[in-house]
Length: 391
Image 1 (cartoon, rainbow, N blue to C red):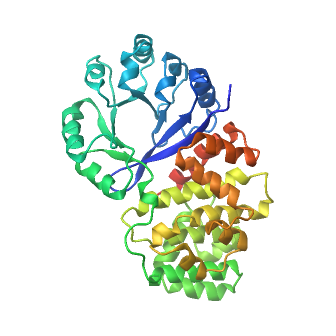
Image 2 (image 1 turned 45 degrees about the vertical axis):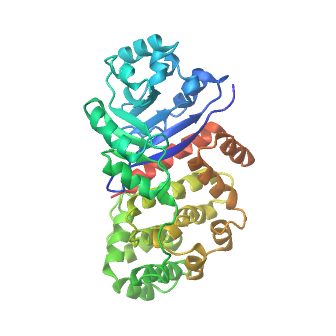
Image 3 (image 1 turned 90 degrees about the vertical axis):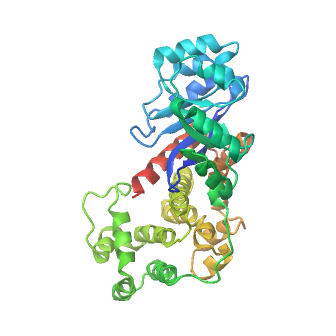
């Protein structure tokens, strides 16, 4: 039985917030449901109970009633193509669903009307935007609204996202928002420039009075920074009251990673909430993937590599422009520009987790000596971290 690697896709609502995540299990027909159940069971200790919904998607050819051998957590949703309910294994699958009553997302296909007539309760209905135009999507969403909330799958562009929302979808699944859109900005905004100046000051261990003077130029930065540090994701036992207090408690190195996140909050992009969440996931994921493989002193730099990996989309500038304004360590700069270096493999694996290519994920993880369980667990932990940091 081969290892089962999991990739993921976000579900983005009309407010541009990630409200759920799809977990796509990369299985072969030979692996089947026993491998899927084993992979899901191995995540029990890191599954974010009570967190945002996680949709579980398996290849259609592998789905049968044994999927329900997995004790799905309350926030798990199982995706099922309608054809699976009407095929050879359909009766056993329906019986298992009626027994265990998991949350179901039915994939709409030519057999969907028959599947919906079976009386199964579906909380969501997924529509493939590669097969349906906007008019069809709007019509089907209206017809099935009483049977489940509509989710648009395989959404390739921001324009398609907006069309899906206009058609009445609850959310759209895809990475459409990570591609920079529109005309690139010529320069940084005043707020962005001030944050970069602060990042450089903190990284270079500048005098406290100099840093505080820079903070006073933009009170909103101080406020946002303290909100990050005091968020649930940071896990401090006491509340940080000021920047000076933060330095005392954390030191400059730890503080640098949180200050770096503020660049994303200065974005005016309409899709900034989804971009910010993804930046947080990448930051924590890269740090977790590198744990035990690099010196602990480099963990903060790896975190920043992930956090900065979407700055071009967030700020509307090229990565070259952004990095010219900052004095970052060479391994971070090299990875962000795709020039290799010792952080590149970790960033590449984080990006592969979003690309949906199972063999590519397995190859990248194998080069780092990571098992599927280690990789999959790191993804769920990174998701939980990003959710806790969100406000």
